[in-house]
Image 1 (cartoon, helix red, strand yellow):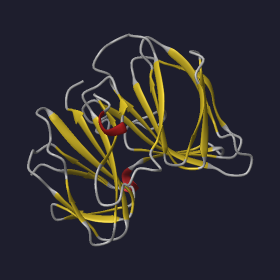
Image 2 (cartoon, rainbow, N blue to C red):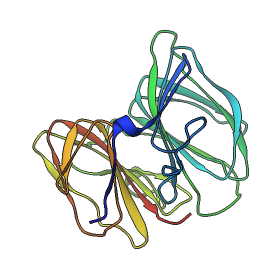
Image 3 (cartoon, rainbow, N blue to C red):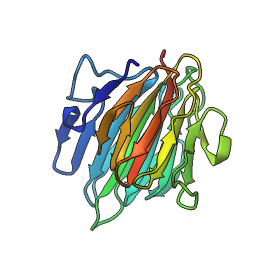
Image 4 (cartoon, rainbow, N blue to C red):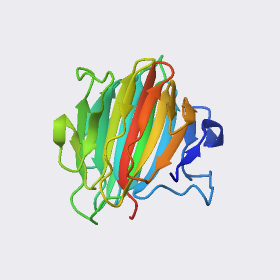
Amino acid sequence: MSNIIHRASQRGVAEHGWLHSRFSFSFAEYYNPERIGYGALRVINDDIIEAGQGFPMHPHKEMEIISLVTKGSLEHSDSQGNHGVINEGEIQYMSAGSGVRHSEYNPSQSQSVELFQIWIYPNQKGGEPLYDQRDFNAIEQLNHWVVLASPDARDHSIKMRQDAFIFTTKLERGASIELPTLNDGNGHLLFVIEGSIEIAGDVLNKRDEIQITDKETDTIKALADTHLMLFEVPMHR
């Protein structure tokens, strides 16, 4: 089994006063030639935005951008006229397509917002920018996989312009779950949001990740109450 583990302590760091970021892959001032991306997955940014702060209007192009809010709220506006507030447990999707400008702000004047921002290369160039958001708070996530994003909008998920999937689950201590079967040419990246797990003889803790390209079925065992995020992405761009 050819697994690669990346520990939380190995992630990139950026501190800007109003923004506290941890990077799984090279981004902005953080550059690691061995951490450019994972197949079609380009960015997993772990951000905390202080109250009343955010990103002013800025451009994107040719990228699938997914924001998963884990605490607080995030306000979005873009040049296509889309506007929305994404709350804890919700995700936002923006396909930048041929080009779009957007802003992201923390609308609260008292509470920080915590989120993951994910970038995935699309499987087509150009196209009209797209926007969507989805609330997963009412969907049971305990001890089974929930599809957040997919190429075909299955099971209430957001549809992406890529043959990729984003899953999540919340495992009780002692519970086990198997990784979904990989499609040909794809790889898994498993990210521990909270908690601790054992997989393939390795222990992963909060903000650790493991990359798996073998199609063998792996079992995950929760060593504590755990929140996971799982990506399945093509290993080519």
